[in-house]
Image (tube, rainbow, N blue to C red; front, side, top):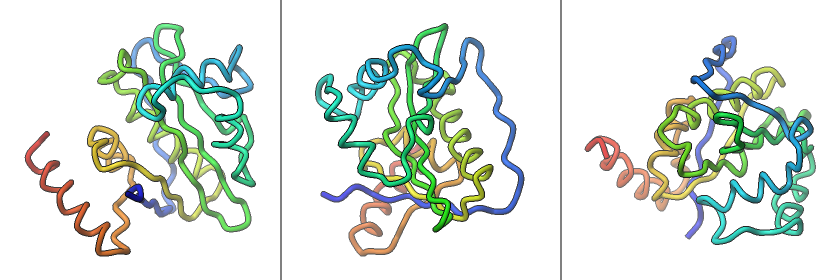
Length: 176
């Protein structure tokens, strides 16, 4: 089944300042020791079935023309890398892509997901992107809630998407 798509449009407003939860800091790929190992360790929590390797990383990231390693951010909780998000920006099309968003289980529920979403939007705005998108799975309800808070909205461009979003909206309205 094709992943759901969520979209974002620049509202022209200044990005909100990031509020860092206690014990949380952000570093990009180039500021992190052994970033590949840290990234592979994090993405196995929800995005892959097992810890992958360099080839997996290369296939995930370098297929995007505008990807640069410094576009990948790590979120540290009490000094440990626990989450990651990548923000890829096409400066010609003014379109961004939010990619490989993952959080280790022990860091969930600490505000890091919201922070990742807000950071992504901040970067999109700072780089003058007009639009952006991300893909997600129907069962990732906590992530979908976070993306909605960050200003992303459902892509309803197909009947399949409309039907699937209707089911998700029912779950969200029940407070699950």
